Amino acid sequence: MDSDPVMFALFCEAIGKDSLDTAACIMTSMFTATNVSRHGTAEQRERYLEPFLRGEAKFSISISEPQSGSDAAGASSTARLDGDEWVINGNKVWCSGAHLPDTCIAMMLRTGEGRYDFSVLLVPNDTPGLEIQKMDTLVRRSLGTNSLFMYDVRLPKSALLGEINKGWQYIGEHLDFERLSIASSQVGNAQTALDDTARYLSERTAFGKKLAEFQVLKHRMAEDRARLSAAYYLVYAAASAMARGEKASALVAQAKLISSQTLFDIAFNGMQALGGYAQLPEYDMERYFREAKHGMIARGTNEILRSIIAKSMGL
Image (cartoon, rainbow, N blue to C red; front, side, top):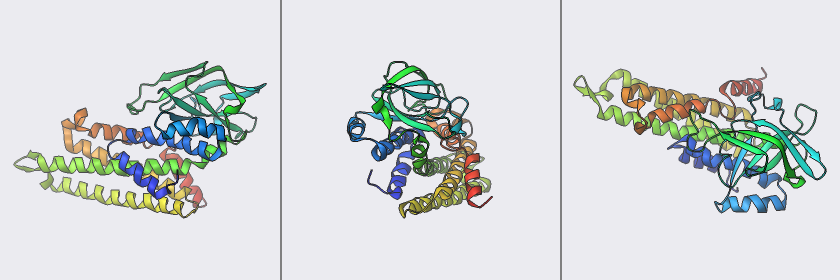
């Protein structure tokens, strides 16, 4: 909790070297833990943060709904006060890790009539009336992601995180950290994918020579190396700006945009270089490829990131 954005980026890069999904296992909990640390009551911090820091509890975050992904403010699942209890109804999707034991879900729910009138409620995943269905997805195979169905779910008034109708603000506060963490883990994973490709090209022989001797493959690898270096320095430029307390949303958006596209292209080239072997899970490249595509969607699609960057340019 005391580390600065640069240290957080280094941590996520290191975890992401093996798998973006492995990194998500940690980063997903961190997003909610940060919000509880900033806005939770003393009772909430004791109940949720202390066991989390001991490794005995986990967090998940729930924003998206079937009809509201990038347009998160279009969410319609509701929480209303009934005496001393909140009553929740609705349907959420893409709630990663929500099904795991001892998980608390930070759920963004509509609590007013205004477009941005949302609150965040802390919902233990064993709460009666909450139905969790794991989704069969291309990625998220280790952490897992879920659909949530709420039917008159009742929670005590104390489940509210922070103030009522401040949920949109709380969720937005950590988006830069979230996008930075994804970008840095993508840089780490891209380095591994590039290393795996280089190793294969150096070992595989065709037409009487190593694949690494073919100019078309050498030049492709050189281009990938240059683009990865650019993505790396952009990630840490964004992290450094955040550490200095500067407004860095546009720079973070650039870092995630370039990192996600770079990882996808490196994994794509790795799939091409390994040929038929790339189709086999034991070669890992097919996993890098699948997870790279997911990274172009999660927590801000590349199209949304381009809009953020364009807005910063006055467009």
